[in-house]
Image (cartoon, rainbow, N blue to C red):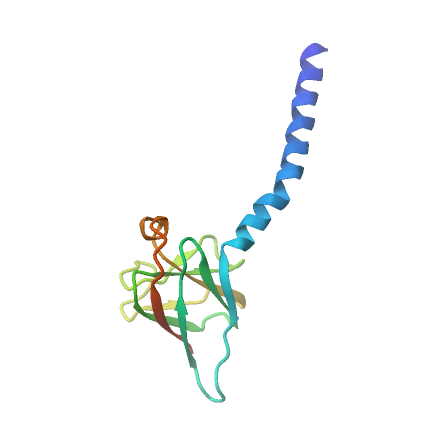
Length: 143
């Protein structure tokens, strides 16, 4: 009986702690976003260009909707920055960097499902720790 009460008390304490900390975790995640951009293409265009400047650990978010089978190519120039693709349709984030094994020989990633995706532009932790502020230019191409 004593063991059951201890387990029940421990479970209740853990649930209470998680409930109290959840908003803090979510708030911290939102604070890491420097800016959010909805990707828009000009009429009859399949690419869009963007400029940004990162600040420490913060990242820039570029959101877009695409269909299954479309080809995504991201070209990035500028400072020491990296790009990752996020989406509910993905098991894990996809490294969109030049030497990523997840891209084909032409630097293209084929989207596995229709839905909303997000490209995050961030800098390596070693640079963020030094509070670097690199500039970048990015081209997003979807066909």
